[in-house]
Image (cartoon, rainbow, N blue to C red):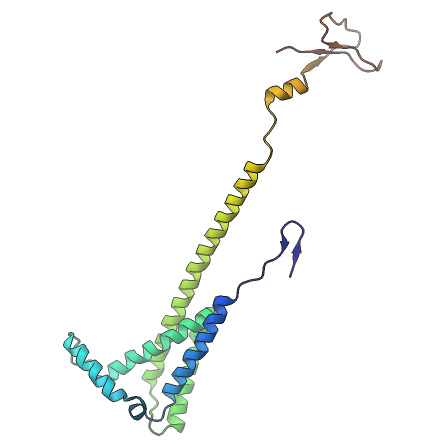
Length: 219
């Protein structure tokens, strides 16, 4: 903590938003790992049944019949990684762009694990693409949101400083009135050393022989 003689100790930076985002990220990331590491999604979650019902609803709403299970899975993978990218971008703060590289690597690791150790799952390059797209959308959204919040905060701080400066100026003592200043220090004219001062009663006779006499000017 640094100390300033005029403004006191420097206030600590708030870490609340970063802490909340980090906690939510790890909570949601644990859920995602539980889903993607399950040996069989259909037996564990009834994915095929749910997907069939969703497709029926979409087709009734006018979605083309060509939009099938593969397309639905691609969109679902995007949606699953959007919150991961968003929360990780918020957790990184100004380094939100790191999520653009980390989460695709996480997706590659997940697909590799599924292909090597989960017989009921199949590694697919399209899953990596869809997961990466979702992560990028979420991370970029987090970056944009943070930029908007920081811009708003700077405007609020400038407004507060402006109002404080204005209050200080209003509380400062007013400048002395010109007429009062004239009465306190009347204007005078320096006369020559051997000048004859008129008998007006407003001349000053010098006390020092080296000092010149002065004559008060009337306005």
